Length: 584
Image (tube, helix red, strand yellow):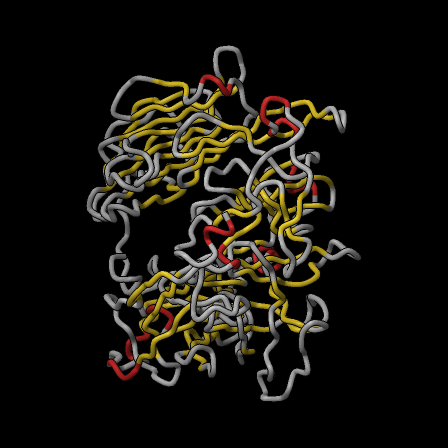
């Protein structure tokens, strides 16, 4: 389909083909590769968005394909059983081996790596130990990324923005155990050991976010204890930002698919949500916290003043607050927390208000100011999509509906919801799909009919007819994202950022080429623009940074003292003047 699922044409592949997966290039939408699920070692490739496919015989069975994010005709294919990586530079027409005995791999990252044809690989060397290699698919030279790091733990390589992470197993004399030690390469320089404020046993690590010039890292210290740390710009010196975060049981960590209730709000700088673990039970988290200063301070979420029926909730801080589902939703197969870069301030989430998290009393909650205030919506909780820069919210409601199947939508930021009948049959809704970036009014609903054949049904919804006019200048207002707890005037991470937001009362559409960003200006520095440096941490959200233990190895020349400022400026903060000279 080339029209958002309105019409479909049957793909013509080779006779007897058993396609297993479709891989489309995000950079060049005309480039498509389909892998073969049968015994034949072939691939099918198209350079005209699937109108025509060619078959190519290959010396491997492709388990997965990854297109290069910045070069349209380049792709990698991995044979998991043979642990061998292959590449193509002509959309899949020809393939050559990149490296064997590969366990992890990543394309280079645009605006960080000068050569975007480069591949980072974790692979076994001649001595049966694992190393980090790099190789350009345009050349034959294979290079060890950093010889000084020596061997690393298998399945540890992570490439994220300007950071490369690996892990080594090193003996911890304090606990008489082997410790998982993290090493970081910043801007592709040599690996450096990562240091944490308290020398404690590290079982596992999980990179949570690197999008704002520093690293948020979850460390699983021991059973029932996972903390989140935030780094300096280099990613090597870490400060505790939140302790005892709700996470997966040990089994998930040990088998490589853990989850941690930590979420970046995509529409706000420096804004993150997290669930604290309960001290009474690991089945449910305790409560939800939010930070607007990249982990400097955390606050509880304010519950709505009124519920969805207009009655007072009688839920006020500090004894009662709003709690959001995070891993719950994903474990049950739906998105329970959604935000979009194209919709500033808008967050749609599943949760409940009260003294603690409840599995049974859940509903949909919406914030239009980056999580400071919330309202309870009148729609059932399930998958959500944000579309047309936030002018439209679509929800699948209940995933299983008998006889007639509806979806719900709102064009007034969740104040009211309307039902839309999409089929007279019983449909199990699997997914709501929209174009990446959430900038259109077209939604594709994918589901399974509850009949004997369990047939798939694809439904294309174009909401343009329901939002009949394009917005005009008087349909917008200016809104500034800010840290509501800092007391500063409309500033967030040292800058005042003004957005053009559509009024909730105006059910019009923005259009694909709408620009919500209007202007940015720097703010004067205050204490909220700084976080605790390595070796310090806050005892609570209102306290100053206090000295804590540091790794003795950090001390210069074996000295008993490690000299460092108490504070460091938040990496992505843009403030100027003010208290900057005093804090640093």
